[in-house]
Length: 335
Image (tube, rainbow, N blue to C red):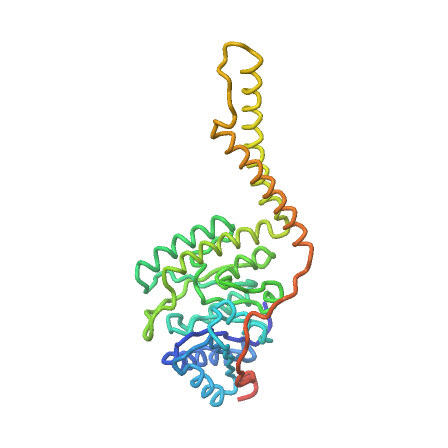
């Protein structure tokens, strides 16, 4: 059993001004109860404003002034959810981290259940919106995406897309976010040996605003899935994937050229055969293309092996424009 710890709730947001105060109140109410039970020493709420234009930052500033345990970070523009989360994680010192969306679809009353799983030995706890209050054009692609992620990565979760999750902070010393990788943190953590589990969470209809995701999310999600499959399976041995494809392509082309060469020789050495003219055979050009393509892929695989042996300089995920607030809210014995 993990001893009492501090918790940081990281809330990335974009144009969610109407929901911020009710969300802050619900989170505070839920975590105050956990503090009263002595399960955690204290907590803080960190809002990361990902370039809002609706007054969200002004509301966050007010909350940080009214509540000592509330902090805010404003990014200079919209960098994306992964960059917003990564920026927030870089400032967290609490032992446990909770992430949730700011649209009031995630219920803060579920937070104690996440902490119970973490205290019980889990390293990552992912929410599962078993009953979703979303239209079919969001739920159907999500179901397909979750199935593919689970099959390709071996990390079986019902809802990889759910933003309501809990982590041990030290996970982010090893897992770095960029692009749209926020939904794959459990997969990346599992690849490094961390224990991942999930719990069913309640999902509410959005009371304010509208969803920030459109059709492009499906395309991005598929491309990100290919990236994750490569990173989790071949990040340390890229030649095994790229080189295998190259070797297969090269072999097919070489076999085809060998066959055509043999046919060309036979038709000229032995009588009774119609001569084969290679430049008239489409197969000849296909085989040459396959050989050249296979050789390029093999070279690319070798270059990838060299690149993986060189450490890369870490680039900051986003540019921070402003910071507000700052201390842990409530500790046992201090009211």
